Image (tube, rainbow, N blue to C red; front, side):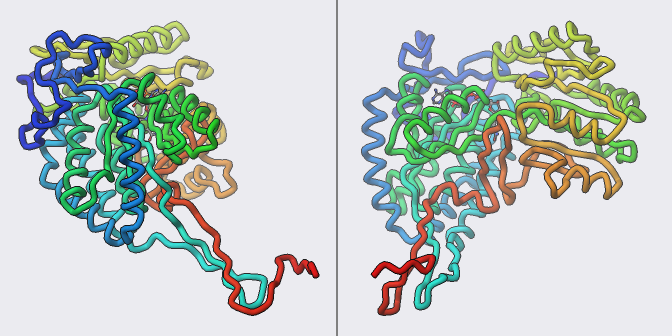
Length: 517
Ligand code: NAD
């Protein structure tokens, strides 16, 4: 592994952050959230980038009142016209693609290509939503009664709450907001306090475009603490849907509070994703996919490859090649040319990484690569070396059952495909899964239509676990929360279904042939 360094960066002036009344350029004295300011740090240097004034309970209430009004206006706009607003937002995001992508990198430490790629994902989902704005519709269903028509219509749901994780500070909002907007909902976004600047810049673009087209208040932002703003938001009956992305612990709590008021939740939570490598796999393909999946975004993707389950006949060769590939990775400033791995988000992640490595060793695991911190020259931030840990014989490695949100990849071996599948499905989470094999019998077993294959929401053949396209529904089962976002019919989560039955005859006919005379 080698390292790169480069000078500090600031948000690009074209994003207009300095003009936002919440923006605090000088954060001297703003230590701790009790100061009313959340400071955003550059994880590559450990230096503050800027601060953001926090919302209070009062400002939250005002925002919600305004949103309720905005929803009444927005839902009356025809869906294709709502699509034109989303199209204009996509166009505006295109003009800010590089600046916004760079801000993502600056604030959360992913490399520039991934920062820009994330904003591109929001642009893609905007395009998708524009098409959808002319397609959201329901079925006509045969009625059992003569001269009756039965049909479904899909109606706007209301103001919806979107809670986002730090690691996708732009795209997770995009997946939700672009669909919700064409569906006729207005969107209240509460971002992670680890990435408030990206949220401010992104929401400002959407809000400005919509307002210029005569639609104020469709996209609103609250930036506040979980105690004061988060709890208020999830308990708020004016928000019929809470879409929450983050850890399983957060989702368990949010899910319970929202269920307590009989609201709807869309939960996108943690993953513990595995790649199975069969003896007949194309190892070059598997290797590239595993390394990208395991070290990309410094192991801080929900879909990060956390476990490799390799057939015993190829495991040694695969681990050797992985270790060699890891030794060539450049770690450093995410905005510098040639960097493949940037920092992790903060000291807490460094501690979690070191703790997991120590536990893995205690449990008999062998660290084959990484396992320690690193200090790229000129950067004072939070860096760790991506690690490979080989499980002991018998595959007993309890630490691998948890999602440590850092670049650690555990390698297990197996002799029989059923054993590999059982290992893959043995964790609590069920987000992403992959198999590498040249045999259609094997891959069909992995995707088995009887449900006995992968138990995850995403299943890939000869592809890694991360890097989903927006056209499919994205999400996972079990402790991952069961939510689906982005493509396919995910839009249905943002609308309410109404089954309509119309009698165009002159007689009252009861269902099930009941006579009541
Ligand atoms: P986190 O759970 O710490 O925080 C996520 C969000 O929840 C933040 O905005 C936080 O402020 C908010 N939150 C926490 N408690 C809350 C409360 N009581 N009320 C309201 N909001 C509250 O997660 P994180 O560290 O930001 O992100 C990493 C986690 O997110 C990982 O587990 C990762 O796998 C997961 N993730 C999942 C997906 C997915 O699509 N499945 C995508 C990205 C990240």
